[in-house]
Image (cartoon, rainbow, N blue to C red; front, side, top):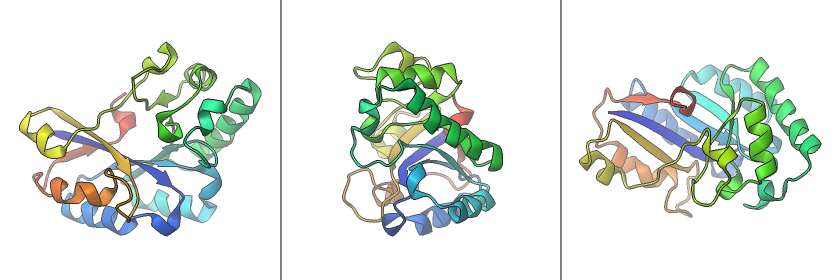
Length: 195
């Protein structure tokens, strides 16, 4: 079985559960994770630190993430391209940064999807009710790990949040007890390796 784990909200450092990621890397030698980062909340130093880990990949998660509807309101194609160009510059500087995108709250406008597809980005979407642009490069699944293991799936897709606090039912702490059910040499992969 291969596990594809992605976690949202890199950049809200006060609530990030980075220590748990390090524990998972210690337990699983093949551990990898895709983090969705909020560009205006991640420092240059933080990108440098993440580059050193070799098991973390970072994709874009909105711009400010002030609301979960932030990217749903993006309609100006030139502004969208500016945001993406800024991130693409990071991709050139850091190998851990990739051209992948997930809107906060899984929400994004058709304009965002169109520009992302034109520029060759992959897009993480909740397939319910989004445009066909998004469905061309989509990734999503949210089920209990125990249920997924029981189904004996080849690929286990997990998504959640990189928060310490159990504010959401999909925070990293929610997954820990179930992840420990997996064999030590479970193969983990980044989203980019599966699109």
